[in-house]
Image (tube, rainbow, N blue to C red; front, top):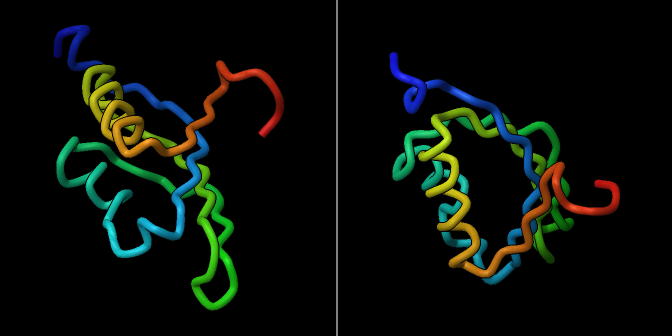
Length: 88
């Protein structure tokens, strides 16, 4: 295994707006980017109303994780990780 193939973990918090409720956003992180996802916490509106907030542990190569984060950014989702200021 080369250093580019080394598996790493990255913890993020992502807000998925209600407009994306029918989009398989988290599922695509697995199917399209080959990540292993652990949902560490989630807050969803009652009766599927409102945005969803997810604390995710992403596992994959650095390249896979960066490509997946680019996908989330391209959807204009709010993403926090341990490099952002403030608490989460």
